[in-house]
Every structure is written in structure tokens, then in C-alpha cells.
Image (tube, rainbow, N blue to C red):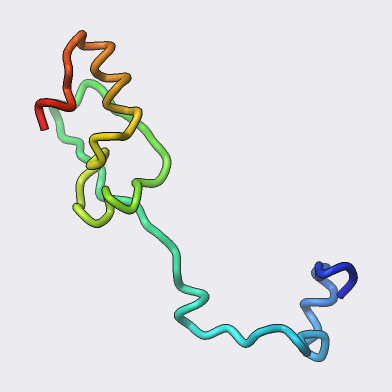
Length: 86
């Protein structure tokens, strides 16, 4: 390992892992996943984002954080204060 970084060849050889912290399954499986899409035969518009926030994942609802800029954008498009509707 040079300069604090390892290249793939160094990582491929287990003997070169000396000094690296041992990772557990928990450390390696800390991935977030998205929510189920909200869509049916009547859907006309899809709003595509990236990964839901921690708040959205905890509530199981897309754009669950009223402070999300998404709501400011939708409010401008609809000319309404949509945050007050939640």
C-alpha cells in the first residue's frame, strides 16, 4: 500500500491486507435501498429521483421531508404552498 491507498493488485493478495481493519458483515452490508415505485395504469407523470433520504426511508414515503427542495419546486410549478398541505 503506498500513500494510504491500495491498488487492485495489492488488495487481491490477502497477505497485503496486514494492518487493515477487519470488516464484519455489518460493516459491509450498510447499503441503503430505495422504496417501491408508486405507479399504476393511470400514471401520466413519473418523478424520478436518486435515493430517498433517511427521513423518507424511515417513514416509507417518498419526499417525506417537508424541507426537501422538491417541495419548493413543486410549489412553484403549482403556484401553491404545498408544504402547508402535508
